[in-house]
Amino acid sequence: MAAFRCFGVCLVLLTGVSAAGGAVGAAEYSGFPGNGSNQSSAVLTDLRCPENVSTVDSLNTRYVLRWDWPHETAVHQNVTFTAQYIAERLYRKPRHEKYWTTVCVDVLEHRCDFTGAELQYLALYLLRVCTNTPQQSSKWIQIRFCPDKHAALGPPSSVRLRSVKEHLEINIIDPLTSTNQSMKTLLDNNLSYLIQYWRRSEEPQKAKVLRTKNNVVMLSDLDRQTWYCVRVQSHYDFYDKTSVFSDTHCTRTGGQMPHWQIFLYFLISLLLCFLLVLLLSFCFYKMFTLLKSTFCPAIHLPDHIQELWSSDSRKQQLLAPESPESVCEPLVMASVELDAAVVNTEDQDTSSHSWHGSGDSGVYSTEEDSSHRSDLQMTGRKHREEQHDGTQLEL
Image (tube, rainbow, N blue to C red; front, side, top):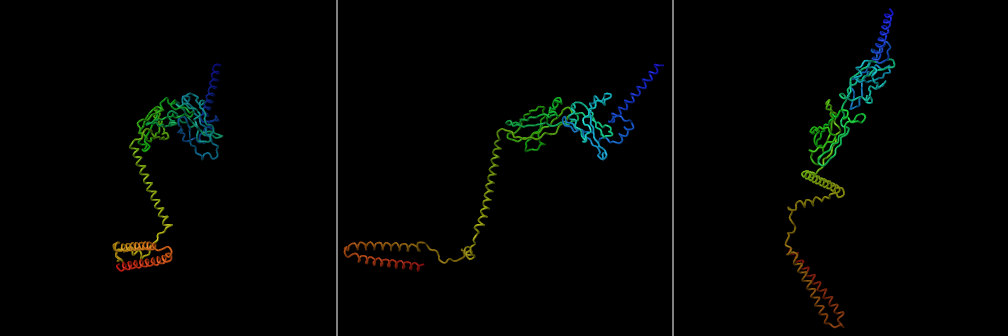
């Protein structure tokens, strides 16, 4: 009998403990301390849960969980949100609620940054979020997240070009984590790069593609003294993930310029110089014409003079032109003979006067000389007038 009573007491105690444990589990699942089943049912029906909790904005090791929530239900409520995460291997254990790690507590934004949670890149996690008010909380909404599979891969953190004679040297720096670590170490060296390069005069669609795992690449099949552009993508081989392109970088290769290109540049420069000279000449001509019309306006001749100029061939000439010998030569010869006669007469007078004595030759010689000279001058003038009258009559 005593043994039977002992057994009954133990059974009652075990039943009470099990009931208490179930109530606590239900309370933990609903997101607030256990206050009875009736209150739990009211909470689940009254307070709405976050919506569209399906994606995580991620890049390398930066993870941000986002969700939506209808604002019209929060008119008279002070609503906040709480977000947690747990590793899936721990979630499979019994009483896993104690392994959940809280990241955001009572935040007003519709987002939670899990970057600082230091999630392992190759592990699998469960993320969940609920709505809170001072009186109650909604049920949890959770999603499964694997950074290795779901996180986006970023492009190289830096791409540098350097011209080495006729080649291009490309230096690629790996994508970095939130702690400035190389992503190649997290991906077990399964990170490779897709390099696109093309002439700057062409379209990127005609670019050549080179795939490599090296961080330093030398492009050799290039033309000399030519501009080339390069951009790079990151590629994760295991999940076949490819990043967006990096920024485009352009530079020119070295080496000696081809002869045909030198000749072409010379012709182009010569043509440009010619066009420049032609343009300047035209501008100077226009400026000169404008200044001339402004400061020196054109003077028009009278109409009767213009008519004479325009009809010279139809008008009769007043005097017919004759040979210069018949008009000018007799006058010149007469003048020369007269001058010679005058000079000879003066010489004779001088010689005749020299024979007279010194005593009475003063006044006489002077008067005779002056009278004789005046006669000679009148004779010469009359002779010239006769010659001139004769010439006019002949004409």
